[in-house]
Length: 211
Image 1 (tube, rainbow, N blue to C red):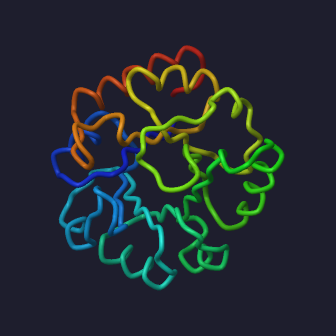
Image 2: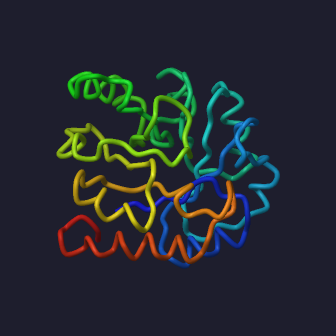
């Protein structure tokens, strides 16, 4: 299972995430976010073997590519209205497309949205709410059970040590994205909360969801 820790701002939190086996680390490039970071700051942070992911909301393809180069990013998580052409300029295999299931009143409409972006991303991130992220709200996990997504997908929204096990059991995502549920304050991760969340997730190994 892919483990992504997002909203990172400090070297100590990257070190913790890496030591606990996370495969992805996320950095938010959005001025109004309390977790906003600059490309120069992210470039100064070391991430070990974790893939480095930038979260982009309003930026166009040229700015995304510039930030990715400066911050030494591997992937771009597209949270805004960037279209498929933007994703192709960035590079399809470098794109995580964010989808908000709450926008769709019927599961078939969600599936259509996944299909729409299938040719312009490597994987999806399904987040709670209708926009944004890092709010701590949850999706209807049961409704996502056996979702026929064209690509692997990560589950985000309200995941913590208390909830992540249930979430994995109910909808068996290909990965999880941890953010506000493992923080003391926006951008400041709590090592104990993060470790507890990964322990809770690992307990699903016997059910075939984690390897």
